[in-house]
Every structure is written in C-alpha cells, then in structure tokens.
Image 1 (cartoon, rainbow, N blue to C red):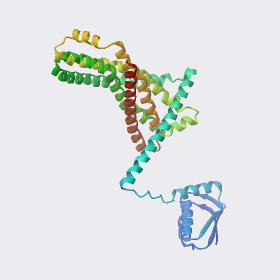
Image 2 (cartoon, helix red, strand yellow):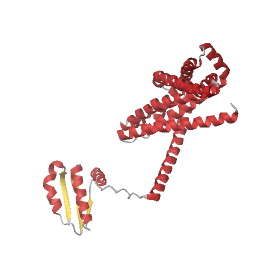
Image 3 (cartoon, one colour):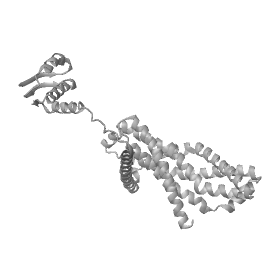
Image 4 (cartoon, rainbow, N blue to C red):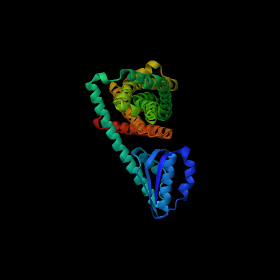
Length: 359
C-alpha cells in the first residue's frame, strides 16, 4: 500500500482525514510519501506518529518518506514527545534498598564535590583574569552588593550577637558561681566571642541571608534564560555575576565580624556587670588581661575564607538551577545547608590548625 499526502496537513484541514487514517488496514508494509506535502503542524505530525505507532503495534510497517527537512524535524520531535514515559524502577525494600540509597547518595555527593571543585577552578581563573585587567571589575555591582550583604545586615547581626553575648554571660556566671569564679565570666565572654562566636554567627547569618539570596537571584536568571543570553553576547557569567558577589562578601564579612565582636562583648559585658556587680571600667580592665590582639586576629582571619565559601556555594547552586521555580526553591535551601555545613567544617579545621600551631 502506498499513500501520498499533498497540500497542508494542519489543524484546519485535519478533521476530515482522521477517520481515513484510522481506517487504514495495519498489515504488511506500507509507504507514506510526504514529498508533495507543503505544510505540517504538530496536530498533523501527531496524527502521522499515531498511525505509525498503530502499524507497529499490529506487527506491520508504515515507512514515512520524502518529508522536507523542516517537516521531518517536527515529526521527530512530536514522535519523541509522544512516547510513553518509562515506568520508574520498582522500589526495593529492606537492606538492599537501604544500601542502594546510601550508594546513590554517595555518588551524588561525590559528583557534586567534583563539580564544585571545577567551579572553584573557574572562579580562580576569572580572578586572575580580572586582577591582570582591573578594568573588567564591575565596581558598580561590587558596591551595590557590599551594601546589600554588609550594611543592610548590621541590624540583625548586631541584635543576634548582643543576645548571644548576654546568654554566654548568664550561663557563665551561673556555672562559675559554684566554684566562686564568677569573675572569669569576663574571660569566657571575651575569648569565646572573639575567637569563635563572633565570626561563626556572622557567617551563619550571612549564609542564610545573602547566600540564599545569591542562589535565588542567579537561579531566577537561569530559569528566565538571562544567563544564556549573556553567553550569547560573549559575557562571562562568572565575571559578571559571581565575582562581584564573592568580592563583596570577602570585603563585607570581616567588617561584619568586627561589628559582631563589639556587639557580643557589649551584650556579655552588660550582663556580667549586672550579675557580678562589676563596673564597666573593671570589666574592661579584666577583659584587657583576658584577651590579646592575637585572640581578635584568630577570629578575624577566618572571615575571608568563610565569605569565599558562602559566595561560591550560593553562586554554584544558582547556576545549577534548571527549568522551574521548584528547582529554585530546592537549590536555595540546599545552598544554605551546604554553606553552613562547610563553614562549620572549615571552622573545625581552623581550630585544629590553631591548636597544633599553639595560637
């Protein structure tokens, strides 16, 4: 059997032909010649694809020939979209399923770690490029991001660290009073805030506030195909989007850390003075004996590293967004979790390193 189609097989002319296509006997080998076909839309392509599938299901063959390249491409896309989705594998239960889930999660984590290392390499390459050509640095975007991640974060960082300082002082006095050492609460507040709590709380707040914002912003641009448009215009998204955000964090987080240290000691000092009956001058004198410049610098030295990690993770997850708003929300949450996890891991590494060096 040989069939020839001519003219326009589109929605407007399709209805009378549906019954004729359905009536074709699906047996043997048939040829459908489209060399004279002038126009085809998705409805017509779907009718042809459905007829071919009917022949195949009956053990027959319907060979489509002569289609113009544009029409053949449309039929291929419609035929691919019309294929039934593969059923998901049957869920396994018990120990085997548990081991399979662990294995799948391990492979996914490893692959993401490899991708993040590659992204780190791309960032370092871009940094070298902009350092050797300072005119490529986007100073307007840099200043704007410094305002957003630094200046606008002062109220929440200050409030949080003041409250943490108060809690540290209250708990310290409560525990040290059992041994008559309430005065050492000053040491507790000073050392813990300057070495650990100030930078750690600042980094966690920045990760939750700014890191998630980076992921959401870049992810939305990815969904709207704005990043693809940038690449089409020969703009490097890492230079235009990633580096200004990372540089802003590296500049702003150390300044936020200094502010957080001051506010944490202020809150702890107020509570200590109230509970231990110290004057502010006595507190400052005791604080001066308890901490040194080295104590302050130990905490501050972590700030640029934490800032870089937070910025890199936020931008990395934003660039991984694919196709939907659900992906933006999921990867934004994942960005915050990964940032906080890596900040704590690096903080532990710093603690071990400083302890080994005797700092």
